[in-house]
Amino acid sequence: MSMALPANPVLPPMPSADPMVPHIARVRSVRQDLADVFTLEIALESGEVAPFAPGQFNMLQIFGVGEVPISFSGDPAEQDHLIHTIRAVGPVSKALTELGPGDALGLRGPFGVGWPMAEAAGQDVVIITGGLGLAPLRPALYQLLAERERYGLIVLLYGTRSPEQILYRDELEEWRRRLDMDIVITVDHADTDWRGHVGVVPALIPHATFDPLHSIALVCGPEIMMRYSIMALLDAGLKEDNIWLSMERNMKCAVGFCGHCQVGPVFVCKDGPVFRYDRIRQLLTLKEF
Ligand SMILES: Cc1cc2nc3c(=O)[nH]c(=O)nc-3n(C[C@H](O)[C@H](O)[C@H](O)COP(=O)(O)OP(=O)(O)OC[C@H]3O[C@@H](n4cnc5c(N)ncnc54)[C@H](O)[C@@H]3O)c2cc1C
Ligand code: FES
Image 1: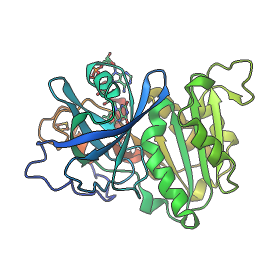
Image 2 (image 1 turned 180 degrees about the horizontal axis):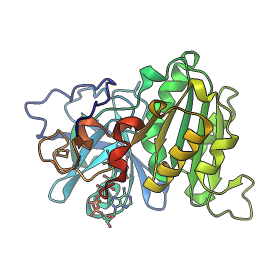
Image 3 (image 1 turned 180 degrees about the vertical axis):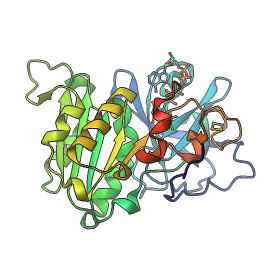
Image 4 (image 1 turned 30 degrees about the vertical axis):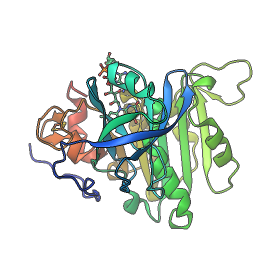
């Protein structure tokens, strides 16, 4: 099957003799966000800056344990350090979340195709995310807010399992006070103090305010959430080519060599992880996804 691939820009990997050779980075600080989620601020030992585009990722390596893809979750305008938010789910991610200030790790990247920030200019931007899916979208939010006048309405629809699972809570509260963006949070299970929405994220879409004919949607989260969100966006009148989503696949090389992340003709590591919906719609039905 032939397929046109996304045309949004990719930043080159950091200068390195070999994209497979990790840079040495050190942890500057660690913040615990949730019981099993930690945000690391790290810097390259060489002092090099590390420009990235929202939606791109690094391969983070714990020597002797392994290497995993982790999205950038910090502000792309701040280039002297990198921010990664990590959920401890297995050996490598757990070891990463156990690092402390001064500890060393390996870093390769940035890799992949990011969110379509240029295409979003002049349009309403609808960000739909669930759980840790907010992390890869946070750099996009920073950029949207830094260049606020370039975009129409900015709507963030965010779902978590429960109120205590809300990621970046303080920042969301701060953004909520802004008059130039709309944030709606929903939880699967409320506690007695919760005054917000209860239910799944896709259910928020029909009630959100945006112009479907002049909107772009950025979607990231669990697979099932993305599927239902896309259906709701299409029902709301968005066109398929205005819906973008970020896919997760196990990765090894991250540069299109090993085929580990391949689905049909697509390498998620280098053709994605962000894809325009109409370009991968058929692949979403494949079992691997
Ligand atoms: C492009 C890309 C960007 C990513 N960005 C981030 C990020 O910003 N932050 C982050 O925490 N993770 C992110 N991930 C997921 C992360 O790479 C995996 O969680 C990690 O590879 C798990 O490796 P492990 O060795 O710790 O656990 P493994 O041994 O690989 O997995 C342990 C167990 O956890 C399950 N598992 C694996 N991945 C996940 C997951 N994502 N969520 C829930 N359960 C899982 C496995 O099925 C297995 O049962 C990203 C993945 C991709 C492809
Ligand atoms: S991870 Fe090796 S080809 Fe994508």
